[in-house]
Image 1 (cartoon, rainbow, N blue to C red):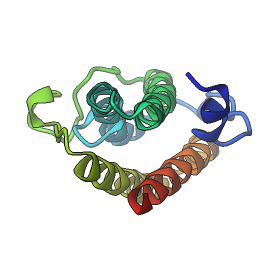
Image 2: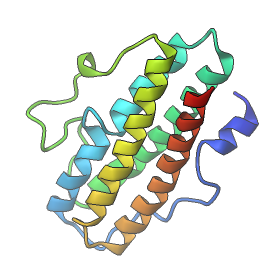
Image 3: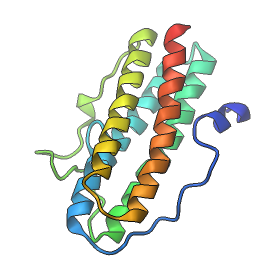
Image 4: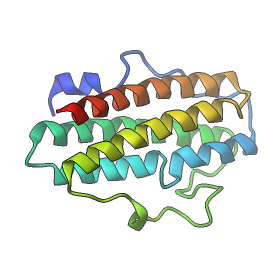
Length: 166
């Protein structure tokens, strides 16, 4: 993968240390949605990997999706570690969902314009969800981590917004 591209898919600063103020099952349940819901990080990793495969005729676009998927995988790892620290179980089920993750519901498409528009919408949704979650969690360590992940999501949104103009 293009090394320059890798540096563009996430904010330059490191993530804060993964820690919490203590165990809190309610916070673990709240974080399960961005962790493993259809529209969470797990869904993002899978659909962006799919998008990178179906966009192979456009090497740059394929690499963008692969790079963004790697960043989303890092977010997923961070959220999973937080869930464990909070006393939860990092299963691939969102606590608010009726069932566990189902790949049949992912927004599969091979149309580049549709894929990019969907990616932009997904990134805006992630930003909005993380901002909402910050209002539900009173743990300074988790809020710092979420703020850092929001920085990445904003970068992804700007990438996909620019790609829509091409």
